[in-house]
Length: 315
Ligand code: UDP
Image 1 (cartoon, rainbow, N blue to C red):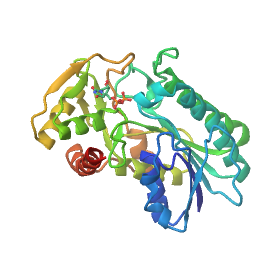
Image 2 (cartoon, rainbow, N blue to C red; image 1 turned 30 degrees about the vertical axis):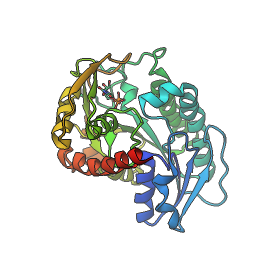
Image 3 (cartoon, rainbow, N blue to C red; image 1 turned 90 degrees about the vertical axis):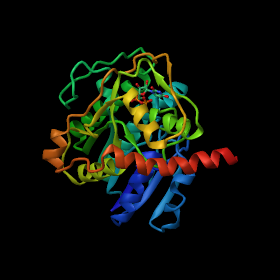
Image 4 (cartoon, rainbow, N blue to C red; image 1 turned 60 degrees about the vertical axis):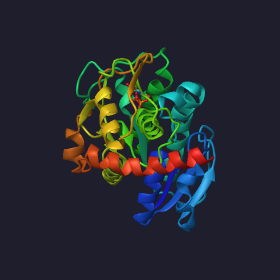
């Protein structure tokens, strides 16, 4: 198998590269490093089946030779990043998806789009099933991300229906694990960094909003199963274990120890109040369910963030 993966130097992308190399694939990792990092793929670059191509996939990309799979994971996925780069976010979700679909079409490859639970917006149906159409503010600050992914899903379906490209769509819910950036602004890196430095944990709003956190290895297993399936419809992947953000802060405080307290900050605009994946479809179509519970996943992630915090203190 020869597999092209955009966003391959990012958090989820680099774990996928690693997994696909272990499966025996030749992996062509495409990334412009706007949020990805070479250190995520440092080990992988020693493998002669791995190639790194520095490229912004919002511009067309030509690849020589056959390609069996095209996975489009390039995106600015953290709210802090996409609020800072809204136009790049819209471009990679729209033009980037168009370009990667074009590549899959010309190579007759399987295509997999990394979509998101954000297509459901601030959901009025709970938990979120794939047949829910969502509740998105297209002109709000999160619209650049949500609408680019909704467009990406629409164009993937159009390429399936019009050109019979072998497309698939994964809707990824909150995921965590090693290789998240310490400063990416998401809740877990913030809380772990703050707890490890003995700073207050910044809970936005009253902390009653919920999320459901999936460990990255579980997610990657589901993505590979979806890639290997013939499924074209969107499939949710995430861990249905739901928790309030305030409880999450307390869990991390208990795990890390130390003297940090919780501090409340204003809730960002259009912050979804609840989020929990309905995963019946992934269970029945892919035989998939998460295996790593939050306690175990957080322990593994803490070991990584301990190293990151120590590194950043030295530099
Ligand atoms: N959040 C928080 N404190 C932080 C960062 C985030 O309370 O320092 C909240 C945020 O308002 C949201 C949830 O945690 O309700 C998850 O935020 P994140 O940025 O991780 O991703 P989202 O799920 O909103 O895309």
